[in-house]
Amino acid sequence: MNQQPIEAAFRGAAVREPIRIDWLNVVGIGYYHLVALLAFVPWFFSWTGVTLAIVGSYVFGTLGINLCYHRLLTHRGFVCPKWLEHGLALLAVLSFQDTPARWVAVHRRHHEHADEDPDPHSPIVNFVWAHMGWLFVRPSEMERTQIYPRYAKDILRDPLYRRMENPAVYLGTIIASWGVFFALGTAAALVAGSAWPQALQFGASVLVWGVFVRTVLVWHLTWSVNSVTHMFGYRNYETDEESRNNIVVGLLTNGEGWHNNHHADPRSARHGHLWYEVDVTYLSLRALAALGLASKIAEPNRHRLAAAGRLQTRAENPNPTPP
Ligand SMILES: [Zn+2]
Ligand SMILES: [Zn+2]
Image (cartoon, rainbow, N blue to C red; front, side, top):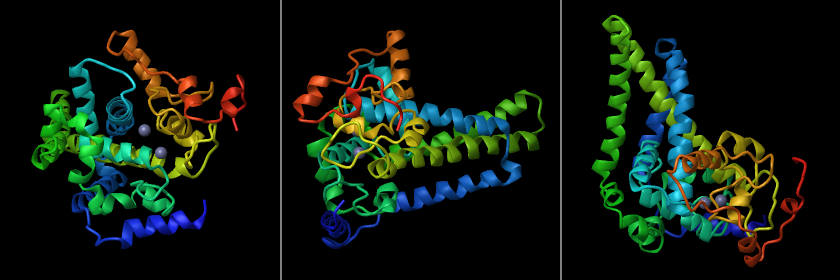
């Protein structure tokens, strides 16, 4: 990477206009991290809570963010019944990564300008900016009124996604889920015969681990796609940005870390192109298809790659060894 884009991006992010702090993200992301630290306090521990954090990162992160926000709503890599789409989108909303329209708009802008000045979260500024720094400020060019007409018109045709643009509805949905986790945890303990003090402790552990630890975990997994996989890893395709396939991020994010493949063929719902590029999100989609709940799955398209003028390198070898 040369210096010019770094300076240009820095000017774009910090100097070109007065900075507006995104207080919702500053307070929200700060608050979630603080509450998640309660995981280190033994009183909040339960194995059920730990299990909920791990399983929840699959349910909310993989099915909500990866499959719905990213591969379905942003890139239209498959179709599924509306009730299922809305259910998956609700899981994504509860991951507190912004509304469907805004997530999609930001990500489509990323693809259009990847690693150039208008990219909302490129590490050409620096690693921390790409990972989470970009979330704390909102340049005027990233206001909803600026990006929605170009990037999110199709999403906003859906009345449910339009309603989510109301902050009271969006935040209310997230905060209501805190109550649901706490109440279900407490009720389950009471039904199992616990006394009230133990039941409340169990409910609190379900809330801390099942909501706050899980959300923070999914955040850093999603964010590592924006930061790590635009800096570290190998490239199967000579794309015109800095995207990489990163084995650690690829496995931990259940497939989103095969990011160079994804930039080379954004529509494909399958991000793992080589035998060792395990893509659990795609496998989950195939499972939905086997149940008759998903169809028209976009597979990696060699013609699309060739038409885009991209050179296949590693992927041309039918039996490559992992780097
Ligand atoms: Zn990218
Ligand atoms: Zn994408």
